[in-house]
Image 1 (cartoon, rainbow, N blue to C red):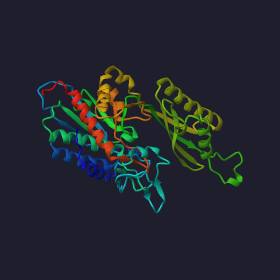
Image 2: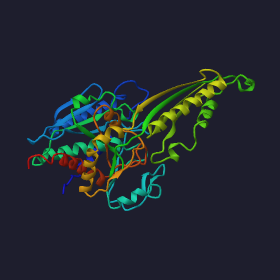
Image 3: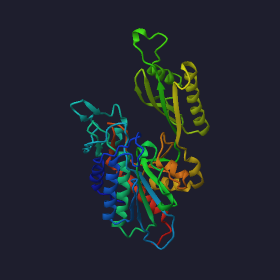
Image 4: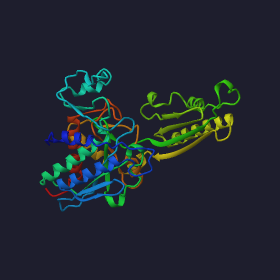
Length: 415
């Protein structure tokens, strides 16, 4: 039985205090300076606990190695998490709270705003009665996506360093910038990382094990209107905001995030800003099936074509850019690494939950770059919002699973 110290709590809370929101409008890497600040902190911490070959490059990628302590040759395994947090809600001045020995009550996140974390709205809380839970203060996200992953990876390696009697092969770790805006693997040096396979630690609830992601595209739309005095606008005004509404109405209304699940794809209007003169829209297109993914992009392009036929050429300008693809095809030939993680979970009393990610990870791109990379749970819930929380027991179990995978991978090592 592995005993993971409560020190993991303070480590995680320390990481949450770094404001590392990524910025899709920035062309820099990392897209925000806070990510470099956290990366520098982590590089120092990794050095202090005894890792080797620590690299922090100018783009904010952190890599480090725990050398093998066995003479047997085993595959080099990697673990990866990301530095940034979502831009959906502020990640500045995060004030994480610890709810000790949760009893099933509503958790008051913010009394002034009457913001409650309630089992009525989030019934999964009932699974953690008696546990310690880390929450937000109701004004920011928490950042468990993916600072919990970073914390769990470092805690696992620190445990191995302090228990040299546990034999293992070479272990690589990496922390990447800008995953939340789809760029986390763009400048990742797979050759330098030099692992045979890896796992991202970037999932949600305890037991999640995933090797299927969406195919993903982002869509940027600019609509050019014509503003004139509304009292004299007949046959003259072109209202960009109304065209934006019309464009959205041309997309299938039942194929949105709030009405889809499982393998069902969607169109997601993430942002709409503008005026009568000009409007901009930002969409996500997602589907697990590559043919359906291509069809969705065609649906969008036809809708734009119809509007340009109606209102004039180039009234609506659109760019559709693929961001990542379903990694399943790259994982299937090496399914033994998924089975390894599945067994590691069972060994510590966790029932694996294997289902497709309704999103993406750095692992999706990395798998296509030659580094097969399934995804493990962190234990968190309600990512990207003020109701985010993570049970401490789930974080500790994630550490146990990481250690278990390493043990299974190293079974041929010296005893």
